[in-house]
Length: 252
Image (cartoon, rainbow, N blue to C red):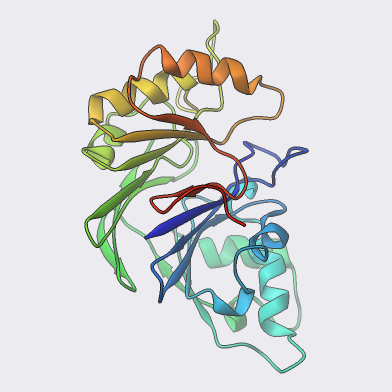
């Protein structure tokens, strides 16, 4: 299982990255995990859009799902004709939310994709075993534990402090955790983690490696890394576009 970071910018696209998007490739199956603002273009550096087998959405904030609207255009209006539907897994009302964003009176989201509602528990998506658990965010949001061939990736999605993250990340090879905030007073509850908090959860879970993502463009990346380093002694990296996890270094 190889994981390529397509987009890592938090809350809105930054100058160096689109919003959240990750490509999981087992060799014969490709899953796109979240597809935020600007990510559809960058995704094509790493896979053809017609080669994606499924999409998994953690929640319905625009920086994690809105490029599904553009993806439907590729699906519905391809010059060779409409493409076969792609399976999309997401929270309740995913189809309705994306249909409103598309606003089409012709071909719509249901013509491009087949939607399945995610609930807490374990599901199989292709060869991947995925455990979904609610995390702490203003809308229904799932963190995911993704397993294949003895490898485990945990994705926090967007979350404030949340013990469920420890269970999802228990013994994971990699915890891909949001780190939207830096240390400071009066941080909002139930919204996002600081880099230090992400590192504390990685330590509690016994994760093998911590990769910080959802990094908001106005924060200093070096400060995020420094604050996380104080709370996690294992391998620690900041997300970057093209970075490959569980399978090597930067993508070509």
